[in-house]
Image 1 (tube, one colour):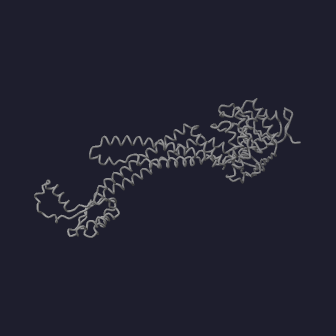
Image 2 (spheres, rainbow over the protein chains, first blue to last red):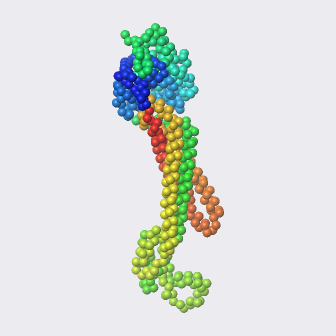
Image 3 (spheres, helix red, strand yellow):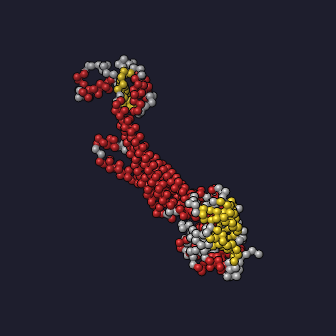
Length: 233
Length: 301
């Protein structure tokens, strides 16, 4: 669960990136965060990943109060989130299998579990046959699926996706979002997807948070073209 | 941490050597160059030290007994001399032997001139090797205190000069080696830092996935240590080969007066173990510490 309470954030030079943000995303929700460049989307992400700390207000993610988090606890906190980036951020020297296994290894899981879970996850992402390949040998869409597999293999309660479709073909973009929605439905994983692809948002619908000039200007459920919303009943 | 995780981290450190082979070659090359320079300095200093020590050992005390010393007293005295710490082999020269050598040296072996002469005017004496030339003054005093010792002749000035040379060589050698080690550490840390810099993204990704600093650091440190060991082994063999060639060259070219000294150049086998130890220790230390330290800046994501 994500809870931002009266959060403001300004850079060291005084520029205010976020102003008095209040945002709550409940467990099991799927939310789009949209906004033009420079609106403050990246600042929110930086706060949510504890790359930086809010200038004022409270940021609570998965029960961790990020303003009070000690540096030594950051790894533990980050393991409770799966992150997917626009540029995939796979480790180039590792195979697909190793990249996915890595997020289990950092949590010191037993070998047996790694050998069981990684193939399962690759299967789910339809990547089993690519297990031994390196990231540079894959297409953008495939790389993003590897990144997704890596984010999911730990079964985190929350997935944060930062422009996950930004670097892949439009057609594949829909597949990625469908995958995220399926994960949300089947595993009850909370998903926050930051995007500026309005067509995707219009198509899928659901909770949409619009940020402009550091403030939330819209936060509601919209009806998607596909005719469904994930609005809770 | 689980044993399987630790094994994984070690393995990935070794694997990184190959996947970053360009940086591996650069780091190992730098490390080898530094080890070679330090190794040559060490060998030079050990050898100079050894030669000066050898020359010093050629020095002897000559101990003259009083003429009225009781017969066979020299046996007691020999015992006493050999018990003094800092003295080596003791050789007794009886007055008869002394006479013979006078005859040989000054009378062209014609003993006829001295026929009928008593040898009583010549004293018995000892030639005593000095093993601790830096304590020569104390040794001369100690020998002088022995009963029936008449006079002690010692090459005090020469010995002191040699002792000084050794001290200078040791001090300078130490200083030069120390400076080279510092320079090496700086160069290697920079090389490793460059290697870490090219992988800063990778480190960042690991942080996002929730890896602890220790978890990220271990493969890098293992990699650094492996680099160190690799460089140590290669440098060792290069020094070995170079040293052998050098010794052979000297042996075949040295003029006779030099060869008595150059024949005391240590064979490589006698310094090999020590050198390997130095190389390994510095390789491992510099590689491991260098990696650990170079990473610090990139772990704060």
